[in-house]
Each structure stands twice: as C-alpha cells, then as structure tokens.
Length: 588
Figure 1 (cartoon, rainbow, N blue to C red):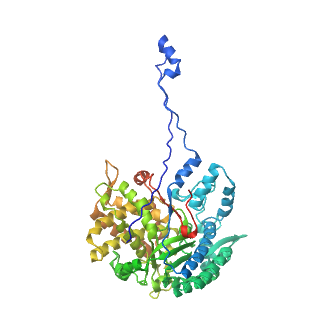
Figure 2 (figure 1 turned 90 degrees about the vertical axis):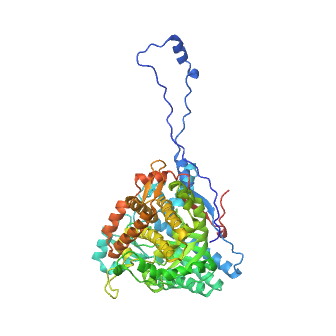
Figure 3 (figure 1 turned 135 degrees about the vertical axis):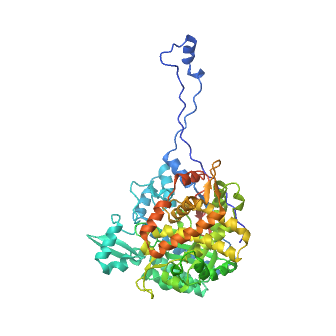
C-alpha cells in the first residue's frame, strides 16, 4: 500500500451563547451607607460586567456545518497515459457530469427550482444556504435526519421517485389491485407519477432523457477514442442501456472491464428511496486503475466461496454466488450524482443485479486516494478521541484499508434471495423483501462481516497474526466515523446498530474517568460473530418486522453515543472533494 498522504484542514468551532453575569444586590430593605450609595451611583467603579457574547447567526451556524466537510483535492498522475486514453478520460468526465442534474431531481423534484431561487439571494445567509445546499444535494441536512435548512417542507421519504403524497401502503395497494403493473412499479429504473386519479410508471430513459441522451453520446465518443477493447464494449452497451433501461448486458460488460481508464456510471444504489427501497439513483465514478496494486489483492477473491461456508449460520442459509469478483485499486479523478452527496464513498461493490452476481460475482473497487485522505484527516483523529489510551497505538491505516476491502467483499456473501423452490422459481430479492430497511441492514452486515472475514484471513495465515488487535480496534473506532453521517443515512444507521449491539454485549465499555471506550477484544470477537449470524438470518427469512425491530432497538444514536460524538466536533465529518483533472480548483 503506498504511503498515506496527510490532509491539513481548519475546523471552525461553534461560538457558545453566554448570558451576562448579574450582580447580586443587598437584602431587601437594607439601608445603604452614604459612601456605598455614592459608589453604587458610579457604575465605572463597580465590578466590571463580562462583555456580552452574541449567539451565532443562522449564517454562522450553517458555515460551521459547511466547515465540517474539509475541502480536499483528489487526483492522480496521468502522465503515463497514452494520448488516446487521456482524450477518452475527458469524454468520460463529460458523461459523468450529466448524472448531477438527474440525481438532483431524484433526490427531490423541487431541487432545481429551489437552487435557482437560492442563486438569486446574494445576502450572507443566502450564499451560505446555497453552499450547504450544494453539499447536501438539497435543502435538508442529511447529517441530522433531513432537518430542513433551506425550506419549510418536510423531507419526502420517497425523495423524487414518487408523488410526495403517496405512502407505502397506497403503493402496495395499487400493485395488488393492478398486478399487470407490478414489474414496472417495482423496477429499479422507473419513476412513479400520478396522472389524475391514476398512477403510472415512467421509465428513466423517458423521464431523464434530456441528460441520458447526451451522456450516451459522450460514452460512445469515448468508445471511439480508447484503444482498450473491454472499455469500448462496455461504453457502447451502457450507452444503449441509457436508451433502453435494460442494464443487464452492460453490467456484465462492466464486470469484464480491464482498462487503465475506467468509469462506473448508471443507476445503482437505492439509499435515496426511504419509502420502499426500490428505486436506484444515478451516479458516476471516473477512475484511473493501478494494475499492480489490484493484482496484489486478487488473492482474496478466491476465498469468497470459503468465506461463505465459514459464516456462523446454518448450512441451508449459505448461498453460492459467482466468485470471479475482480478487485480494483483505483484513484478517483471525478465523481457525480449519488456518489457526490454529503458523504463520499470510499469503495463500492457492484453491480447490484443479483442475476449478474449469480453469474459473475461483483467487482470490488477501492478508491485508494480517497481512503488515504480520509484515514489521516478523519479516521485517525477519531480513533485518538474515542479509544482508551491503552488502545490508541493499535490504530492502523493498513487495518482500515483491509476493513474497506473486506466490507466490499462481504456484500457478495450471505443471503441474496428469499423463498423460491429448488429451481429458484418465485424467489424474491432480499432488497425487495426488506424494503427501506434493507440498505442500513446490508451496510451493517458488510461492516461486521468484513471484520469477521479479515479475522478469518488472519486465522488462515493469509494475514499476519499481529494485525488482529489492530483490525478489531480500528474497526470499532471506524464505526464512530460512519455514525457521524447520521441515522438518516444507511451507513450511519448501520454503524449505530453495531455500536449499540457491542455495548449491549459488554464488548466495549466507557471509561468512567475519560469517557473513552475500553474494548474487551475477546468479547468483541464473539459479538461480531453473533451479529453476523443475526443479520444473515433476518435477510434469509426476508422478515421485515424483525429487521425493523432490530433497527428500531439498536440503529439509533443513544445519549451515550451522542456524548462520544459531541467530542468529535473539531474533526471533519467528511471531505468535500475537488477534481483538478476535471478542471475543478479549490477556492483561495
């Protein structure tokens, strides 16, 4: 792993509101001596009052929130790229930019018009609101469960995918009453619209054609420029998918992609859809690969079938998915759409189509320059603050990197479908069965199973034994980093679930003197195994009631966790990237 680069930042602290001191007078009716009365008449001689500190303005409060996202340039050395690949890279960035206006509308139908209004407001507050609007990709604070800051409206659970007055029960009733609509309504790539007293499903290719058309052309232009055959094949099939809404073949072509210049672009994650967890949001990652670093990690993918069999669950719950699962180590040079909201993704495991996963597995992509930046700017300072002094020396960038890798590997493990016969007929995706509860539960699963599998690799001798304590402690500290994203965000709620389970198991306890956490490593290892088991069993059964119960009980920020998070105020919540290779320069 290359040396970790450090990031320097300045975090502005929130100004506290103080009440001025009030002088205490004598007892009622007491006689004031003449000298004392004279002195009392001269305020200058009295005990000086402390200067009044004004409470922060709304603009100052928002600026403090913005400063929680430290500006960080992300780039890589492209001098060795052939001219044709550099030209293709520019076209890929052009295509990726077009995911932004789509995602803005998917986040909320009113985002574009509200942004236009905010751009007209040149007051200090107006400028700051627009800036935070840009970070949050809308007028609600994603770090505070969608608290409004630039609107009076409540955040719609269905984001921009459904009519705002449509509830989950009404959606289900419509599908039950109109079975012919079921496939279109539950599709990842349709928007539900109300037309009079009826509902209809509109395909993404029509709803977002204004941007998908030019994006498809930019991909085809890049395909003509690159000399890499696998990239050419993928770009052409993905351009066709933008026009047809059929992403199956292009997902398979993306799995076979092996190029120095790569792009991941399309509708993938369903985090934005908190109503039903059905609709995928558009995003893009433009990257430059490191083939040597990727080859060094490739050995782990061969263990995926063995990792599945090693899970602490009954044999009939274990599954068999495709195990090709290529691993890519890349540097990120541009991101857009769902990939560029408040919290920046450090790795991903795609595609999400279970048909493709069954055939070919899933590709794990680690964004190396972003991982390195976050460890030094965020992860290490958090570990220093939350871990007991006895544990701090075990914080490890290598362990953090491995946790990220095995988090992504673990997305390919565990139950994928619910029900169905021996031939797989009538089976249902776990994602569909668990609805909006799927995403936080799946992120918690990948976290805790990732730690479980790193420990398994140590047990097998694939990783050195001296990493064990570093893995356990860096994993635990890393949960506080994710918990700061807020429980409105899937990773944040999943992290809260893990922290509360470990506290309940007695694996971690707050030190009475410092408030920092002491970790019983043996108990933590047992608690990790227990949580892997419980989540997998819920996913296997597709039991939404059990999923909701687990998340309601443990997926929350308790007063104990909040007290710990409050101590992290001067540490950035996340980074705010800029991309020099895309022409983005940090403001002076």
